[in-house]
Length: 85
Image (tube, rainbow, N blue to C red; front, side):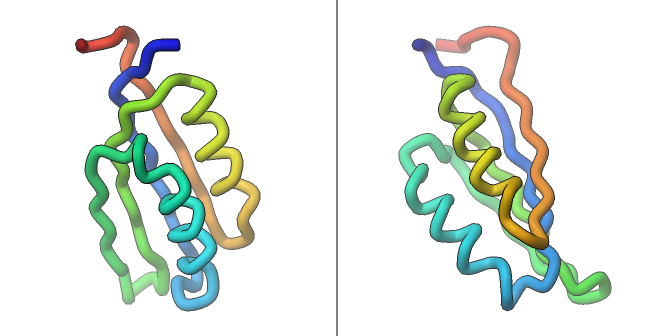
């Protein structure tokens, strides 16, 4: 199955409690992650992570599914319409 360029947006509430579980999942799928930007937002007591990924729909579904079931974690994703390779 071919891969496509996309992104995953993650919001982590109560960063000190929930970020370790998020990072453990992201480490498992590091080969699909092209870039990562993470920012703590102290005013709201959360963190925002944006990932650029090169993945197929199955891989994206597994990553977002595992993240989405974590308490205090919200996740959204999108892949491009076609491959760019």
